[in-house]
Length: 425
Image (cartoon, rainbow, N blue to C red; front, top):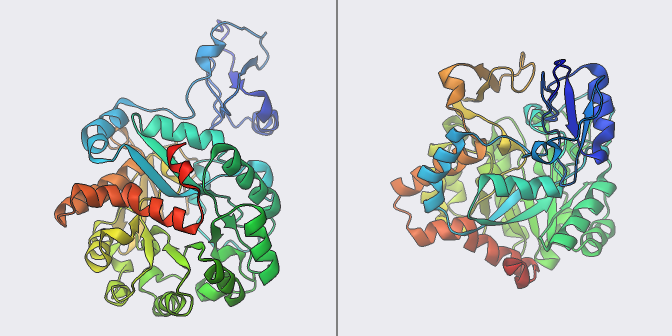
């Protein structure tokens, strides 16, 4: 559109602050997904609204703006083929995704943390994930399917605006008839915790290790440091859900993790405990004897979000059966274009060179190029495909698959207090 070859930016009015922030830095491609074209406008950070076409140093040109306000992210031919040939027919028409993060960038602290106690690579996928972006993601990734998400915020740092984030999630859930969890802080009293869940119409809580006392080294964090007993009592009293991302370097095989997971089921039997990411057992070395122990539990649930480990899936299925497994994605992380491998017990995400910025020093990220990069599809698809293959190996039937991707979650959410009408909205 510009014969002078000037760089062009297309953006919705709501994200002017992002444009200012990144354009001034000259970051013509960045982790937020803001793109500057070399000779033609490209879509930037679409937030379900009409866009403006702003030329940096060039007059505004209205031609083609509607066309330019395109998808949130690119769906390539390799993605469509992967979905149509490998996934679409094996999935039920309706899905429930029990693990999705919804938040806006303004809720995140701008202060650099002195002690980072979690991996940083997921933040390269998106700086935020509005409810509009979440809905559009499902539209792009699952044509022909209907997806109901269980939503919660993203307030990993104590400096984040956890109140604003939870209020936003509550409002999104109300307006869109979606179930939601409060993002909890272990410092809240029993009364504060209970009132926060009730007033926001949440079905329980999402808890995370980085909300624990910052004086505790990451390797020493225990479940009870960020899911204290007084909050467990509240969850048990109401029969609510807790989404639990377990801590510690040994992940699922850690003896203390296993002890405390079993204790929670024993002492708080009415809580609906979901172990996120199958306990972060992303490689076979993360499993240990976990499923020998967890096979003795009776109620504990596991979501498969952001996990592609076939050995983990197989041991889980054989230990607890299909009725205690839930489909979860961890959106927006699984928008990443990647294939995961394991080397020496460490998971590594293979990604196209240059797509996610400077990856030097990150042991979980490795760039590939050429044919290897061209064959990469969405992390979401890789997760589902990995589970699908193991399901076939372990002789799960069609009704088992329907249970994992819909039925189990539908029953769980309704038991926790979700109106049945949400399943039909």
